[in-house]
Image (cartoon, rainbow, N blue to C red; front, top):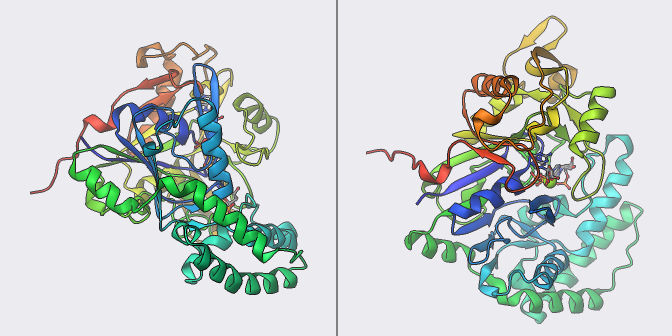
Length: 437
Ligand code: GDP
Ligand code: IMO
Ligand code: MG
């Protein structure tokens, strides 16, 4: 048994949900450790599509337990709806299949209102958030005035906390010129009722995971967003408000870093980004539009068209570094079929300066253009490819070049949205990292 972290190596939407669903076969427990319902993880099994925002992507596997860790910010309304939708489909019949950390912070109505009002105020300078209240909720957590799942379970405590926080939230909303029309007792009633709905799942998740680890269970940690959206390591301030990198799997789940054996990054065979911020390999003309249409690049959470571009191996090498990646899974290789030539971002240029590593300064990065290497495309459909040898030579050469440029091996190649449309080259659960000593 081993414990594996899966994270996005780009700007999110890399296909983490698909890969986690696939790898759940080898795990006992799947854990979300950060982010909230800004995430939209799509799973397709035998043509049936499921989009998950909060519940980990292992939930389609009966008998496997899904854990929402302390590092996640939870909109209880969204979680309750997601649970009800799964139950209506005959899934999640056993409440023991979902564990919700008592310490996870709660997204309250004012967080969503503040998020949306701030973005409106910022005009062109906006971050392009999902408007789900993610940033304001993490702010309250760090400011030590947040509400946690445990607070929803005690109505008196909830009423006290809502009263305290609503007063200052109203001030902020009125400064932003937004409606302050939030009824205190209605909020208490609604969130107390949601607390009752979620009570069967609410547990000390860190302790629960500790017991699972001691019992020899295999854990799969599911990242949300992507490395370049990390609040410390991403293209700040055009980032989300949590640490999306692998190191946060431990903190956001309440386990020690020694519990982690392997770290896998997911990357599309090209790149996408939703919202504002620098993106050196972005394609603004016909090729970008073709990638968007063929790849179906519209957000799983907001429906917004995603910005599209070629793969950026500087950004991927950076992801290898800050996550300590052991391997990469390359998704959506099928989308590149039919492009006569494919470009690979191998460097950046700004005026006379060239870069071989991702610059950490945002203004420098904003001025950079990508330097490309051009490789031949292929015309064959990849839909039926299930083995490495089924791929056309040019597609294999493309994947091999990415592995070479990033310095990590490619452990899986995805050639379609369905669970089965995958070529697995190495199972990360079967290759335990050699322990020191
Ligand atoms: P996540 O947020 O990282 O889980 O990714 P999303 O679900 O937001 O976006 C990935 C999209 O690509 C979803 O619509 C998936 O169904 C789809 N997808 C995943 N892998 C593949 C693939 O290999 N080929 C194609 N064509 N689509 C894929
Ligand atoms: P998954 O898990 C892609 C982006 C938003 C915005 C920035 C901040 O599906 O890969 P936020 O609402 O988090 O404050 O927005 O982060 N963003 C995502 N982009 N995939 C996601 O999640 C994202 N979650 C947030 O578009 O640019
Ligand atoms: Mg997504």
